[in-house]
Image (tube, rainbow, N blue to C red; front, side, top):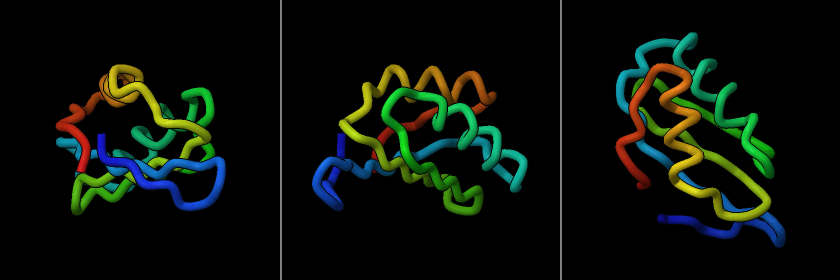
Length: 79
């Protein structure tokens, strides 16, 4: 997983998600991922398929994948 520490106590990871095409899609993905424990910020961009997640610690990819699946999209991987 590609992750970089922005500030002490936070980790930023960028994921690639396929199938997002609009603001509603962005909201669905962001909403599901933001429910994961430790997540403080989620920004999804439909035009690029990128989802940037800031969390207290690195997230398990399986948990992120499950959240994206729940929103109706597919996690391709990390960037």
